[in-house]
Each structure stands twice: as structure tokens, then as C-alpha cells.
Length: 84
Image 1 (cartoon, rainbow, N blue to C red):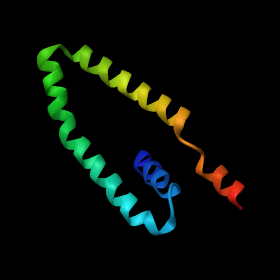
Image 2: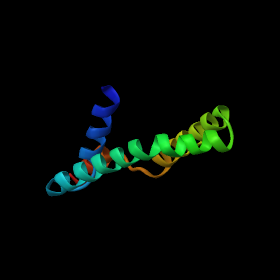
Image 3: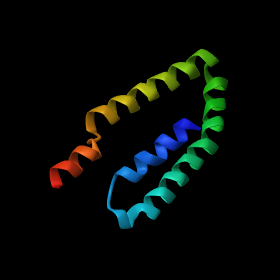
């Protein structure tokens, strides 16, 4: 619930107002593709290695995503304040 709302709000914060439908559609498509592929890829990892390896890969990917967001994603509200 809360995560989905926060993710949707994040999508709405970036870009121009007239691009909102495109960004919402692209975000929804990406979420559904990952939701469909995740169990399949997870099953392959478990078959090749083990459940602990799967969790290790998941933690590593989440940490990488966190670093990317913190390091390279600008705060959209600060950009709006600067542009006036």
C-alpha cells in the first residue's frame, strides 16, 4: 500500500506535466514486467545455487538501487524551487 503510493508519487515528481501519462504507463509496465520475470529468475537462481544465494543477490541489487537513487537522482522539489 504505502510503497506503491510513494513510488507513484515519485514518478509524478519528475518531468513535465504533459508527460505524466507516459511516465505513469512506463512505470506500470516496468513494475509488471519485473513482477512477471522475478519468480522465474528467482527459481533459476535457486535451482543453480540455493535460497541463501537468492537472498544475497536480492540484497545486493537492493543496495545497488539505493546507492544509485541517492547518488544520481536529483531532488525534484529543490530543482523546482531554483527554477522559480
